[in-house]
View 1: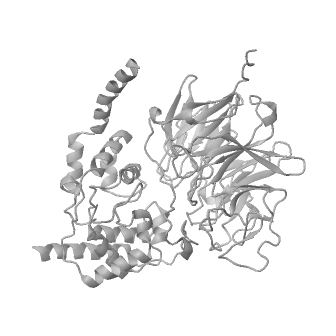
View 2: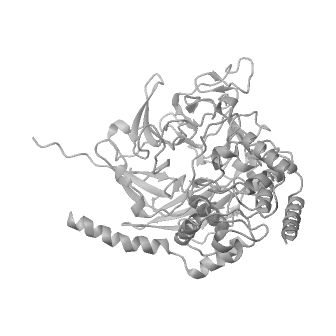
View 3: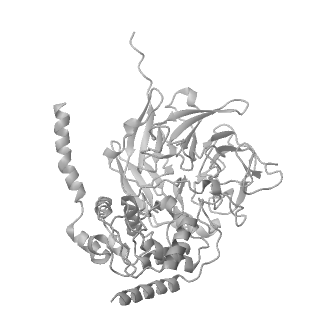
Length: 409
Length: 189
């Protein structure tokens, strides 16, 4: 009997080997690449995402801390994995991309409440969403879809635009953030498919822009490791983007970056040069930082700086006008937690940036990982309030401001 | 204060309800393939007893969404709610896991597998006793044939997670055989 079972197991096993065939040669796209001997026994690993709905009662929004006068409320929930957002012009419809769960959600604002439906599913990490003249663009790793007049046409069938955009095959760091610029062009990052490596081909580690129909492809920046957030300065119209620093090079760096594109063709250093001129310890080159554009600000080691939004609304106090809010989803490749917050970044006349905490409380305690939420992106609404997405709870919070009443005398 | 205490009593039946938020039919359906208590006795079908709850939730959602491809699991999961997925995952995460590989241990494969598991640092994520945690499955005591076929699928980029594909990059067929042999005979916690 035992030998029979063993035979069956062997047969099944052999069959499965035959089914999958031989290993295809592939570059190793890996979050654990560059993990040196010193880190061999490290227990650090990316945090687990959550793919099921989180009940309203399990979202402790009262733990969020904001400056005086600001208030956070639960605006929508039941969007597992929801991250980047794109709103219709009137703010009544919000489209939300995800990664692994493969969905794009549509949230409809019904005044006192919001309803959520799945617009499209079964895509490969459809993280990028953007609106252009009423048309919704969805960027998965291997697919581009356009939904025309989506807000007014709930059964809009997508136009498949994949061919026009020339997407490279590697998945790692190639989930997207996308946005239309003031020039009407669509900006798309192509991350480096590794933690640290010389990318396998020249299609990676860059930011491109296209015409809305996918024509006119232009590489505007290189040496980018993994940018998943950008926005244009309201006055200068320059593009500012966040970029994640590499892992496994220690708790304290290299830090995430906030960069500014003053002209096209700039090189931001990856993989040879990081942050404020740190030569990479693994991928070496003479004069590693020569000709590399330095960041405007350092956003913290492993902090995972994601969405950035220059505030132009009328609701928040005047001091926030034309300052940037940046969401830091929070570290994993660090002994102690870093990020898990929204910061406010102000840049003075000489281009020096100061960074102040704005929304905190997602992570409890400074020593170990004990977080309930992972903030990801911001969306400024027509009334000037800001929506903040939380990828962990699949919820969206609304941050509003009302001048505090003067203290009683 | 009194009302707060009353509130607790109101919550208690709610908790009982959540723990059985799946039908007995559904449970029977699971164990009809995955074995009594979730310990599999069928070739290439995994044991789900004692698997981390989050790992189970994630995989069941991915099957339902068709992101993790399975002609068997995807139709079975159609229309199953998040709530049922959470409840089923919780149920099986609490079932005692058993070693289900029945063949005798081959000392040289065991040695080779143990060395490889150390070299590849499987224990960093799956824990040193391979009992799994959070989104990462229990490997200890899992079916040998299933471990082998899954590692091959990961290595061939046929799973929706690039982490394991990277971890298995360049690992040879005979090494995967040794790993499966060793891990399937490691005692689950």
